[in-house]
Length: 166
Image (cartoon, rainbow, N blue to C red; front, side):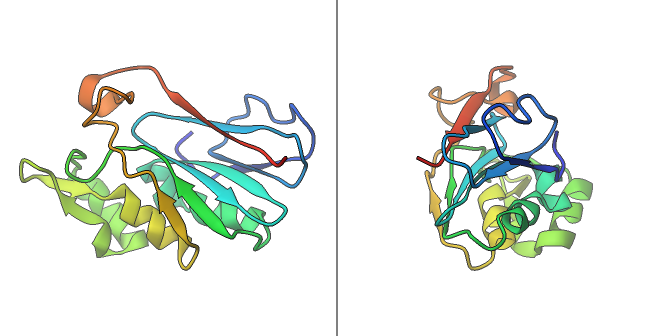
């Protein structure tokens, strides 16, 4: 949805197909999923909670990461960041870049490999997470044929990031 809506899942299937950018649960066996291509898939883990986030630039600016962390009631011990478009490939308009930087700070500004303004989504995610430790896969969806990319190749397919409590 590219917003900041978070759903809480209390039993398997609840909110399946809901229009949201994040889901959290404290219930074992509930599978949570988000679909992404160039946006950032994030899995939040806690002692008794798990969450998944679809973090595009609009969602980051709207506070989706902070909303998901809040929905986990402080039970976040780590964040796991999956493949997404990286700053060297993510050309970004100045007006939209100003909007993200207004919320998350100037460190989110970057430059593409060809010298145009870019957005550093990984830095934006880290700034939104604050002191929560981050494990980053480091992969760029635009640079590799292993991943789908709308921005690089116009692909319509998406990845699913799935997490659950055992």
